[in-house]
Amino acid sequence: MSRVEKKRKRQNRRLLFYFSLVEMMTWITITGWGFIVPFLQETGLNSTQVGITIACNGLMGVIAPPFWGKLADKIQSARKVFILMLMGSAILWFCIPLAGKPPVASLALMSVILQVSMLFIRPLTAMLDSWIMNVLSIHQDIEYGKIRVWGSIGSCLASSLMTACISSWGITFIFPAYLICAIPTVLLCLCYRGTEGVPVPKKKKEKHSIKALLYKKEYLFFLILLIAMNIPVNNGYTYATYLLLEVNGELAMLGVFSGIRAACEIPCVLLCGKLLKRIDAGRLICVPAILMICEQFLYTMASSQLMILFIAPLGGMAYGFFIPCMVQYTSDLAPVGLEATAQSISASMYSMTGIVCNVLGGWLIGLLGARLYYFSCGTILLLCFGIFIHSLQSRKNVVEKR
Image 1 (cartoon, rainbow, N blue to C red):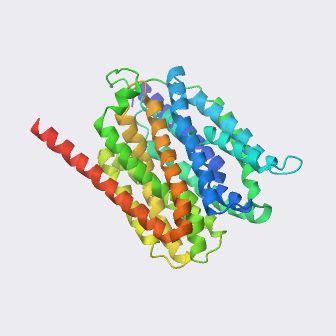
Image 2 (cartoon, rainbow, N blue to C red):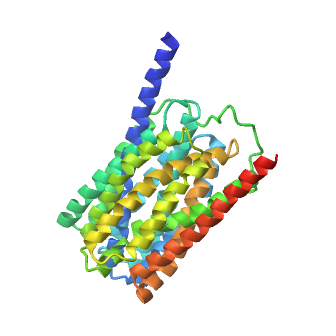
Image 3 (cartoon, one colour):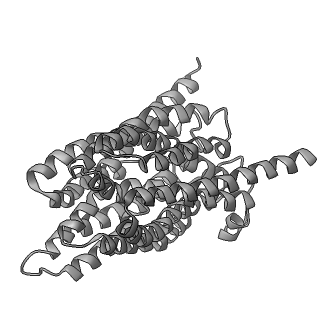
């Protein structure tokens, strides 16, 4: 082995360790986001009001990602934008419960701060993915899955720990915990001294316009599937609470539910990283789509919290495949110079889906119940999956004719 190869391998090992640590710390930091619904319920909001509040959060998530993505592409540094977003979200998140206590005690002010914080929080993981993918475009020997798996490990550990802490100190513990975890994460990001913001050398240069991305038929069909697949992801964070309550389950099990899903992500993220070397991301994403469809329909038959916990691994497995496939396929389709923008649009799709799900979902759950709501979500995903499969087949036929 030559000296140059040894140096390259050492550098790859350092980068793998560094980004794995950043990924884990980021997901530990944002774990409290999954407990926002119980917090809103504790303030006295009903299911419809909670749905509207979360939908407003989603609106912030639609507006913010393209702005942050375009900024990152402009300054050629997703890392700097990520640090700014993490610092801003930590400060705002810490202020949320303070606004609801004397002498302020204003539910309206608390809601405003929550919405503003979402401008910083919602695009966080997409910006981190953009930073990582930019670096990996140069260091192609490093698998994204080996980095992303540490996010799942961090989320799994933090969810279990958060459940115990909430039982002892109350639901408001999620807010100072965010700030406490965000500080070392920011310091870790500030320590980075490597290359960033360099486009993939093999890609042909294209005009730096969002139109260059949105005019691609493959990307548009991908967005249709992405919107539908974000419905189960959104449900896992938002409406699992109501699903547990409908079968007379305990809210404390929400942490166990999240922990099980996160634990099942881990092997699937690693497996997906291996498979992406052999299978196109656009085809491999069919695996999580099928798993999500099965998960949604099985929840309609759940009659106890134990059954819900048995079905939960399907969601974790699906998410483990979904994230690497989504990030890789988005990166493959993105024009040079729009990598961060493309990842941010994917984040916007999640938020856009959240708006519809949270407005209609809260109303439908109040009207029909959580299980029938999950049935309707599974049906929508099944239809969109059929459209995506048809687009893949059409593309294959066009290529064969050529």
